[in-house]
Length: 124
Image (tube, rainbow, N blue to C red):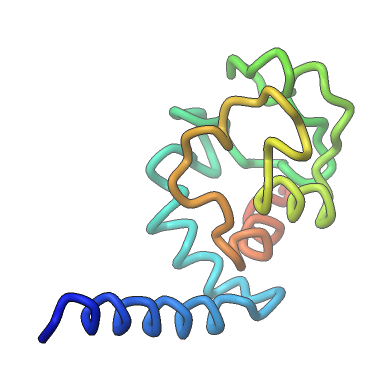
């Protein structure tokens, strides 16, 4: 198969995957994405490369205990809600200029992960 045909097949497959992922509120899909993409740096329970996500919704950005945030994130007035998390996952640099996450993360918009996070990070 020619190289351009392989590329086309990959693009079509990714488009199908993206369409599947766009279902808002799909916590099961979000769990799969979180466990395959986000888990490399984050955990629900503990800080890793990125901060722990436990209690994320309703928390002010940059306030997870024992995590060193960028000055931009730490000084922001963002509180994590459905809306702010969606904006963050879509374009973190646009939401908080100077933050460190969006400048290097290979997968900035794991669609569906926000629904999973909302369910899994609720304070219990």
